[in-house]
Image 1 (cartoon, rainbow, N blue to C red):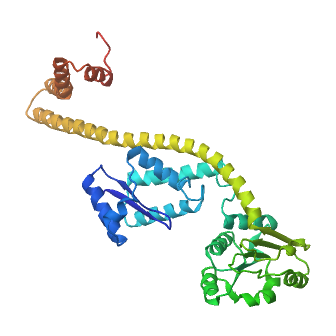
Image 2: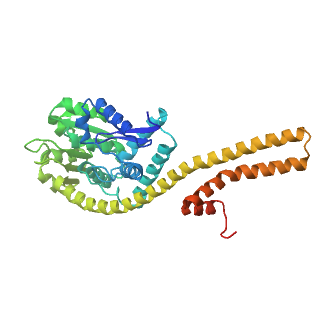
Image 3: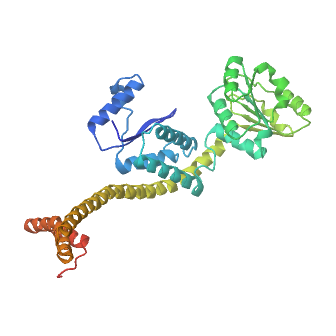
Length: 382
C-alpha cells in the first residue's frame, strides 16, 4: 500500500511515518486501519489526528526524536523508542532510503541538541529530580539499596530511573503487598508490607516515599534506630507525599539528607526555565537540519533524472556503435564509418534539445531558453 513506513507507538503517542506521494485515498485507508486497530470508529479518532507533509513532516519527526514535542520537555526516552520502532521497520523491510536517511538525520540531530544545549541537563519531573539528587549524594548507585514506599505511578517512575542508573537493590513497601510485589517484580526487587519498614529501614541507603497515608509512615524514632544499626552511614530520603510520609523532625538528625516535594518543585521550576532557553536553541538547530534533509531529498529526485538521461545516452551509443560495426563488416571504410558515427551521434543527441528550444522560441518561453543556455553551457551571441 505504501512504499516506506515506520510505526511509533508509546504511552503518549501513536504516529505513522510514511514516504509516499500525497494521496487522499491512502490517507483514508490509514485512518480506517488506525481506528480498527484501536477498536474505535474513525469519526472518534479524527479529532485527535494531526497530519504533516514534506518539510513540516520532517520538522515534526526531528522535534519528536529530540524531545521537543514531549510532555516533559527534552526527555531522553523518546529517542530510544523511535530507534526501536525503526529497527522493527528494518527487520520487516517496510522502510527504505528516504525514511532510513530521515531516521539517521533525526538521531544525529537529537544527539547534537543534547550535547550542544542544556535541554537534558536538569531534571523537570519529581521522579527524575529525586533520583538526580540521590546521584549527587552517592557517586555510584550500584552499591546502594533503595527503599520505595508506595506503589503508585510516581514511585514506579522513580524505580525506572533508579534502575536505568544502575541501582544495586530495590525494596518496595506498600499497604497492599500484592501491588508492592507487582512493582518489585518489574525491578527484580523485594516486596514488603508497610509494617515491616521499621525492621528493614537500616538496609536502605535511599528512601523515597509517596503514599496516600493520612499520617507519616516513617517516624523520627525508627530512623534513629536505623542509623544506629547502620553505624551512622548517611541516608538520603525524599518525601514526595502530600500530606507528608516522613516526620519533619527527621531532618534534624545527623547523617540524614531529607528533601520534600516542595524542595524538588523549586529546583524543577528553575530547571524548566533553563530547558526552555535550551529548547529555543534546539528549535533553530532543527530548522537547519530540516533544510539539510530536504536538500538531500530533492537531490535524490534529480538522481533518477540523471540516471535516466545517462541510460538513454548509453543506449543511443550502443545502438549507433552496433550500426557502425556492421558498416565496417560490410566493407565500409573506417573514415566513412567514423563520419557516420559522429554525424549520427551529433544529430540524435542534439535533436531533442533542439526541438524543445524551437518550440520555446515560438511560444516565447524565455525561461526555458535561458535554462537551456545554462544547461548546455552556451555563451550569448555565440
